[in-house]
Amino acid sequence: MHNLDPTPTSPAKFPAAVQDSKIDKFAVRIFIVLIAYAALRSLVGAATRPFWFDEVGSIIVTRQPSISGLWNALAHAADSQGPGFCLIERMSAALLRNQEVALRLPSILAFCCITICLFVFTRRRAGSAYALVCAAIPFTTSLFTWYAIEARAYSLLVGCIAIALVAYQRAPALRWMCVMALAFAASVSFNYYAGLAMVPFGLAELYVLLVRRQTRWPVWIAFALGVLPMAAFWPLLLAMRHNFSAHFWAKASLSGLAFIYATIFMTSPPWGAAVAAAAVLAMAGLILFSARNSKAATAPNRAPAHEYVLVLGLLALPFIGYVAAKLTHSGMTERYVLAAVLGISLAAGCILPLLDRKSVILAVSFLAALLAVQEAAFWVAHAHQLTGFDSPADSLAGLVTSAGHPDLPVVISDGLEYLPIAHYATPPWSERFVNLVDPQAALIFAGNDSLDRGLIVLRRFAALRVYDYPAFASQHPTFLLYSSNGSGRDPHDWWPERLFRDGYALKVLAVDHQRTIYLVTRPQESP
Image (cartoon, rainbow, N blue to C red; front, top):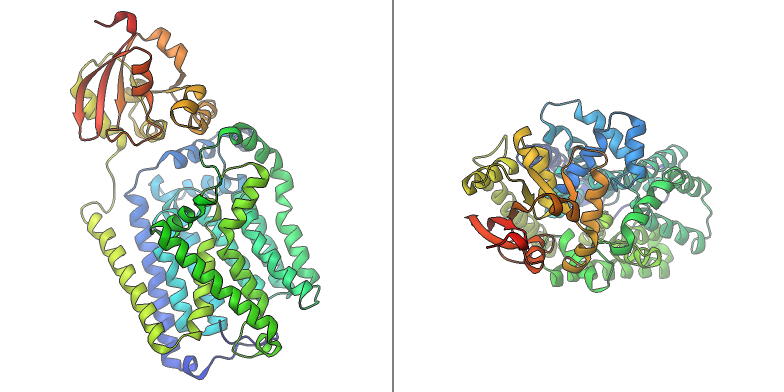
């Protein structure tokens, strides 16, 4: 990252190559097109994808009849998102009739905000051309392809951290520290894991304190104010820990870090780990160079070393999350450390200006080709479905009808499938579609009980037909069972195996690719 005047409030001085007005104007125009495309593509993606399990869980909490009811649901661990996110969703739901778009609109806008902040941050250091490249990198990650069109808080969390980045770059100016404090406080209110993304900022400021011997009190006060809401939300966090931590579905492990990087950057684990490792080593080298060369930190074409520390911390966020998960005995998935996407983009802003012209052209060409292939695949897949989607409940209703036995309840084997089906089912079918929970059996067959425990909590706050297995079995000697686990690889779709082991007779009535409808009969009534 180039061109920082050591005085935070002074205007940036760009190199002659970047100062060219034509290049600058062209980059800004392309960037505006990029933002418009992100919004359009995300709106189409939101309108053509039904809600999935986690989103429906958030909707149930959001639609509680009162704010006190919403807080009560969170206090019983009905959702892992924070109260701030639920309040934003309540307001967003009233904006549009199409709820798939309305409830995902905050995430869409947050992604646009992330892109703008990355452009602003990098432009201050390296000019508009490099800023455009860095702002385009998140388009190749799961942040854009999945979380930007999800009615969950993760895109909003990263958006707040991106705003904090821009503010921190201008530290210790008081007005910007107020912005940073508000951004941190908002991120914590959206999702409790925002605290992890604040750690790199703390490491950067520690570098300022210990190496540069500067105590920037406005920065530390902004940190303190930013985490203050966590005190109010602490009981909600403890409820989540009490209900799910014992057998959480995603345990932290060193071997899983490669998969986390791979999932974020949508590649295979070796490539994901390699990209992250290369960026980390490059940033560590820049930090060492800046620390050993006093002129480098104040040169007009260098960013201060503490910004390199910040970028390195964001890159290493999965490792920070791993340590935190081990210390607190909690879970760890890529969505909890999604702000690492910012680290990759900013690392590119630091590294690209140091490369020769051919290397930069090669890197930019690869990024452009990757985006072209990715987006072409998206539009081909959505060519005949731009404004709607096939309801998962309607699709299942047709298969169940072909199986006959219209008087029997239909047990949805996989709880992840049940919640969206129940959400979209028409009243007649919602009476028939049910789900069974048995946390102890889930530990045996799935290896965790997170899904069953989550459904047990949610049924307290919505009209879900979720039943304890023993009670349901005693009242229904015969029922239908729907399973989509034709490959046998879905760990959550374990009821066919469980019922078979218990001696039930399972007769296939209808099959459609991987989907199967069974007639289940209690052992003593089997032929």
